Image (tube, rainbow over all chains, first blue to last red; front, side, top):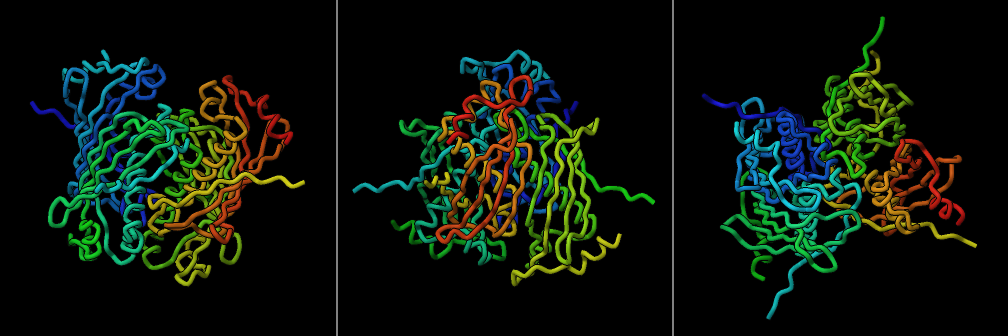
Length: 133
Length: 133
Length: 133
Length: 133
């Protein structure tokens, strides 16, 4: 039994392109963040509500391999897969593919941790559910 | 004989902070890019002129360790050090430190390559000078 | 005979929100620009191709009335209507409405002009078609 | 007796330029916001502390005249002058000038209001001081 990988479809907006005429490197992190938050929302973890409760979901490491640049007019897919890395750390595996041919654009790994209002890392109850699937 | 590491001083601007009240993860890539371009300019490599000549300096991999978040009002230092990684690849080692106490904020490694107007990677003549120092 | 106003639907992305927990003022200009470019594309005027031909579509004045702030999770509509202002100037009337109830978020007027490769304003042939409708 | 107009000096960062090779229109709002917050800080009004106290300083209208585009490598000045517009509204007059020759880049007027934690506009005590000068 196979599980489907979560993904969202997005479009390049012209203001995201820099003087090279391609999407600026930093913008891919925006795409990845947006896809992660959509993923978490689909799992009933609302980033904004967490922030309001004083729980910050924090990125502690990011690794990005840039394979092919996105440009004006491009449509693309951002995937999100999650794995536990340690007792409190979790890793998002997130790739970007150009549509419609799914050419790899970026392969990413984003390691995160939840931090409570005292600044201490912990593993939120609600997250357990995500990882048992 | 010691060599000085290149660095620039910057300030957090409030629009760079997100709803968590801290600088958004993607913004650190903006800081790093700005510092790289200033570094290259100091070495007489102008990113904009390169782009106009059809030579694109392209990031192919990025590794960032987030150590401590910057927030509104913070002053910080962005360092740039460069090393050759292979015949055509070069690596920028770039760290960010909170001022005035130089607390580590982010440790980064950015691997780049120059691509000519035919899309082929090459090692620009002008770069040799940088690496002989 | 009624003419339909062009509009696109968009979603707030969390990185667009600032420390006040609402979409930062400058981001609305990104929304408006994206909607304008989509509008022009629908009229067969491709912003990117124009730029490559040395024709720059330039904003010379912007007036924005902020009515109600967008926040995380919001869906909204961006409208685009165009009117000739003078022989060479055109005005985009662009409003943003919160969905689903269409509460006004922003009322905007963006005045633009086309500039040829010599820096001189002119009225592109292709634009005539847009304004005869 | 002449009063000095508040101003800050800034530099274009390459990531702020778009595919036209010039600073993207929306970025000027970032410049203006940063200069406003620095101005307010100089007057002992900290935007971040206000936000934390539940007082939001909100922009309700913006008028920008784009005179000349900034590009990579440019240094510029952002000015801030403030005037009361009504019992609760205040207007920031903010212009941008290219350095060193002070060529006008942008002329702006930003109308704001303070909103308390109940969402009601009011005129903060601390602001009185600013306007008596």
